[in-house]
Length: 356
Image 1 (spheres, one colour):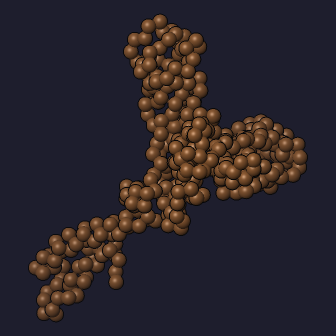
Image 2 (cartoon, rainbow, N blue to C red):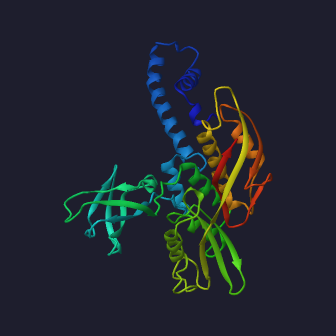
């Protein structure tokens, strides 16, 4: 049986003409050929629609719109883009609800952090991760008494982009292989990773001194999350004030503590041999970027690995692929010519890079 997408105009016409009696003229341009041709065009369109419907029925082939609908039926929802929250300082008191601009983003003041220091919490009007790293001077949208200057000084709660299609597809397909009942590991992992600023987590049962569930989370760029993210996650899972009472999404009787992953600086010393016309100094930015990407990939594996190992061989293999470098040797990590094993609950970040 032919698949829907195989039912092209040509295939339909061949089938129609084949079914005609032998004494009927079916040559191109004949009366019967022209009459059937119009129907074949419409049938091809119908088969294409059926092919699309068939494709969007299944999670492994559906487009984003239908993937979301498939996921909603299973209670597995795409992680929507979230809004960044920033800390800003001004020279004077500014009203709550006042609006401000920096680059192409607008912000709204919604909370006072310190009246004496004139620091406030601002919410970005646009969702996504892009505003997280934008710091600088703010311009008022409208008149503000006594205003001279104001600037964003840090990102308090990172915004998230909408979950990528393939990431959501993989997460949805995984739901066919497990059942997340309230309180089991998969339930906690799936619920916590839906929270703003959380990119992964690990769970461990701690029996002493008191029976509890210890959950470690990792933040944006797969690094240590901010204290605000840790606090917000703790409140959503199991508020400290009434721990174990089921006021978060942790079931009654589950005492949960949330901590953030720690970071270990990876300092690298290495000797590189460059092609003619290149120098180690000129290539330093590329070397830094390459090592950053290598460590980022290791951090992405943290959630599913018991141990992370920073390997000299892999560092040298990545660096030697940079254009202009022909050899890498004598590499040391944190002063030792050996691989670095990262302790559990810790991820590697780039420290000092020295190239000779």
